[in-house]
Length: 232
Image 1 (tube, rainbow, N blue to C red):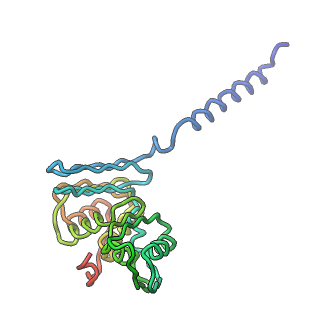
Image 2: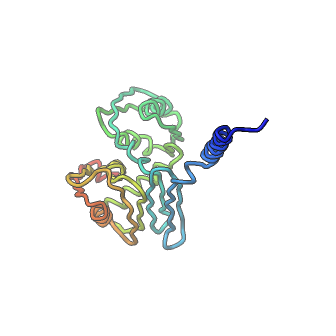
Image 3: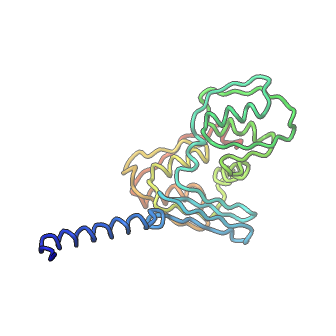
């Protein structure tokens, strides 16, 4: 039986739609929109690389100091937590901080049988994690917390390093930087959703903030450092 022109046209469009749907299903969104941040220390002691959707940041410096993270990956360290444990084992403290943060926390204490009294009231999660970090080896979401403390010290001391941020909303970058440094950064003018794309060599914290602000057309200001920030 011979097909009518109308039926032929419908069949053609049906096949075309099937091909389009199949193409969309086989193309990975990550491969289309993924961002990669990578860097190496000038002395060759380390390198770091990460591939993410939604942007990423990188920091590299001599003496095995290299970090790369998806944008938004540091901000949870600044979340406020309230808790109190009395005569508790470290495993009980780990369980409580895991519950509050929603992160996988692995801790190997220097003194496994020691008990601790600890608590905080609306304090940054970072400060609570320091209690564990001061008493053993701490991994938060697979990241060595002691290495992050080193990065905080480098940034706060004004030391210079390689820095990069790619395809990241500036408000996300500011949130990450606040949690990472313990300082309170905020955007006072410009578009908070402007996209930050900055690559710097031999830059300190002030250089980083100035470059991101200029590139995104925003003004970024910070609060004062407190005693906790002086002792990362």
